[in-house]
Amino acid sequence: MSGDSSGRSVGRIMKKLETAGRQTPSLVSDQATPLRADENARLTALFWGDAHASFLLPSRSAACLAAAKDVAAAESVFDALLLAGDVTENGEPSEYRFMGDCWDLMRDRVKHYIPATGNHDVRIRPIGVTARRFGGFCERVGAPAQKGRLYYAQTVNGYRIIVLGTTRGTFEEAAIDDAQLEFFSRELNAAGEGPVFVLLHQSLKNTHGLPEIFGKPSVSDGDVGAQSDTLREMMNARKNVFLLTGHIHTAFCALSYAKIGNIHSVNVPSLGTVAKNGDYNEPGTGYIIEVFDDRVRFRARDHIRRIDLEQFDFEIALE
Ligand SMILES: [Fe+2]
Image (cartoon, rainbow, N blue to C red; front, side, top):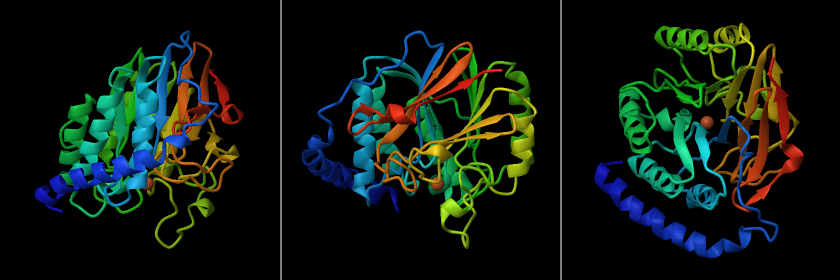
């Protein structure tokens, strides 16, 4: 799509969202509570995945906008917002602009926005175009992505957050090249003993119900792809690595957390779409991460209804 038609689509999507907004206020629950984080935590972060901002599928953008409004009304200020890829449905400039507009609503309540790319952000176009568009988005939201690359790292409150992303155009999986593996190795080694967070769109193979749960065996197994074993080995050599993924769109359920050797792998439902195969298949869901000296807590939230979902909360003890 050309820049001009993308520009026109912004107006179109905002019009559709206004209509959707008028239709959805009843989705905020009678039981709604303000979004908040434990003030004693050393690090607090919102963890979302698969926003899929789209001008063709406005319900997805409406879910993102509702979530942003929940954050804007939060009682707490969060240290970070981690988005595990599929920021957009089709990697279009207008979709990034929309997500940037959502970020503007949240700026006062979140200190650092740390997005990763997913397959929807990268597919169907040269990787250089994706890197330029994603780079522009990162610049707008203040993420320290490096020019031309989809991987970078940031320290927040002393905790290293490492973002990985494909190094060439792919349709479903990621391709992690040697330069990125070297970057990852350096980052893991430098991260010290404390918890380190790795943000990657796709999970490791044979985890979180894969490959069966993905349901598209002819296209992909739904995992990160050829470098899965290498990534697993690198992370497994350390303690207290938290791998944060999306892509599968599985709702909150027993499959959301997986202990893979030493690795704590957490798969978040889709923010923008209806989730599936889980116990709470609503859109607009994500985790609140609270890091303490001895543990990391994951709290589940429906940002559209503005309710905490305590039945899906869990805590991981640090070693
Ligand atoms: Fe995806």
